[in-house]
Amino acid sequence: MDKETKNIIDKLKSPQSRFGIAILLIIFFIFFWSLYFGYVGPTQYNITYSQFIQELNAGNIRSVTIRELEISGEFIEEITIQLPNTKKPVSVKYFKTFLPSFQGEGLLSLLKEKNVIINVEPPKKRSFLWQFLIGMLPWVLIIGIWILIMRRAQRVEGGPGGLFTFGSSKARVYDFKEKSAVTFKDVAGMKNAKLELKETIEFLKEPEKFRRLGANVPKGVLLVGPPGTGKTLLARAIAGEAGVPFFSISASEFIEMFVGVGAARVRDMFKKAKETQPSIIFIDEIDAVGRTRGAGLGGGHDEREQTLNQLLSEMDGFEPHEEVIVLAATNRPDVLDPALLRPGRFDRHIVIDRPGWEDRKAILEVHVRGKTLSEDVDLEKIAKGTPGMTGADLENLANEAALIAIRKNKEKIDNEDFEEAKDKILMGTVREESISELEKRITAYHEAGHALVAHELPNTDPIHKVTIIPRGMAMGVTQLLPEEDRHYYPKSYLMSKLSVALGGRVAEKIVFNDVSSGAQNDLKDATSLAEKMVAQWGMSDKVGPLNLGRGEEHPFLGRELALPKHYSEDMAWLMDQEIRSFILEAEKKSEEILLKNRPVLDALAEALIKEETLERDNIERIIKEAKEKKNE
Image (cartoon, rainbow, N blue to C red; front, side, top):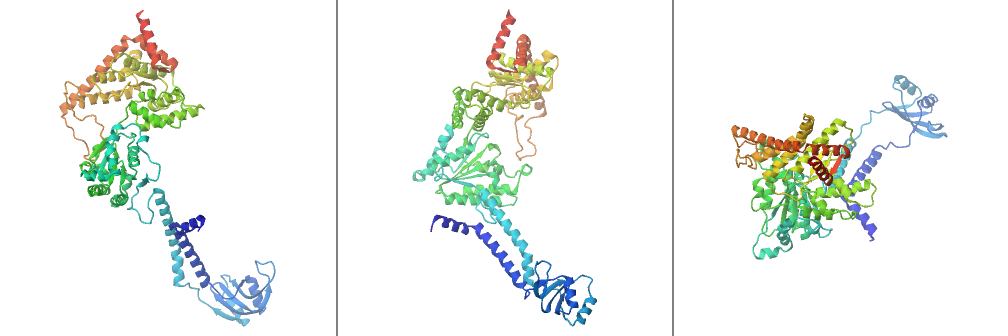
């Protein structure tokens, strides 16, 4: 049997082909059945009513059969007549025509007069079987189309197919023994995470090595980190390193509107994983089903809790010899149910934090593969200038730089494209709008105030760029970039940061003897930072070294309708006074700097009005020249 014939046979054996053949057989059955029961004997020709009356008056009709408004009959002998739909005369023995609704006793009298045999039949009744088939045909077609749509939908979603497969797992399976695998070589950085996962990979490769000494490798590994740090990529790399099947699913895919479906899908997924062991199950965004149970108003949901209960029992039900590892990822470990985190379940937590500059450089090297770069592109400099960016952010940066280069019809991506891409990501897209001279002047002094205070104060991040071109939601931006990644924030650094945030508003007040709404976001950031300093970081002498939880960003966790206050009203008042004190102290410091260096402020503002954007070197040059001129 050749390959083409085999393919045709395989297609005919598929469920879709069998379903289509069944539908065709049903249609053909109904068609031939109707032909059989609709058979009326010899061929009858349709003649006009006028021709019928003419032949009746001529005495050429032997017999007629009347059924409602239809009359059929037989001529005494064949006659040749011109039928309505024929071009040539036709010999007719049997005929059929339709009576006008007003015909009655007059026609019967005429038939009797011409000695025509008259038969009258009741209305034709279809058989019960025929009525049943006619009634069922629409339902057969509707059900058939619905089954076809369901099969197609399940095939698109990666489901196993079938009519009622709500309880089947929707996990996508990747077999890295057959396909090109993602390995640790494709994951830049994360050295500590890779070392911690080394034992897990060895267990999947050589389980006997661990059984020999009676060691138990953690069966549940929880990857914790901010969005975009590469948790899913790392999970796939683990499967690629071990060369085992990888079952990937998002936790939200367990949940349906039918209670019990999520639990059934969990059972089905673990059953399939055990059948193909050694294997890895990866559950992304596990907090969708793993939130604390009994949450009540905060999202307590029977279906979600049943799904979580089933997940807990499946993980706890592993036999010692089962070679199945469960990986999960979340950026909200604080909302997970304690039973999910206890030993025996997700007892190994691996934190995947934002990458340092060395890791950012390695990530950029991965994402610029296949891109044509100019010789002036320094990935190390770009990596050091992008603190806080995740792997996803850096991928977006490299892609945005390529799009900018294409937009400018360049042959290579140069450093200017990366700078423009970074500005777009950090400061927002340039808004094309015209502003008045007064607003432009206010914006220039506002941003000059930020820049001058940042330059004069110690313990502040270096100025990278200042612009009065409207970007995003802001009319202007002063961009400060740290020279190195920070993990601790001293009080002196934070107080300087408060002063920088208030520098723009203070500059407006000094120059225009007025303040504007342009400082809204600055005030919001400054108030939030001061609140954390007082209520969380213990930096207030009057409040003391206490963490009172005020100012924490709590999403609605569902444990309580409102988080309780762990402090009295007197303490709340004292915190308010200290927050205000910190902000006023920072504002006073900004005012001292700007009043002392008023000529420098004017020089910076005039340069911004003229150039609209100033880089770090230009800012330092303008400040130096203005100070020298003031001292002369």
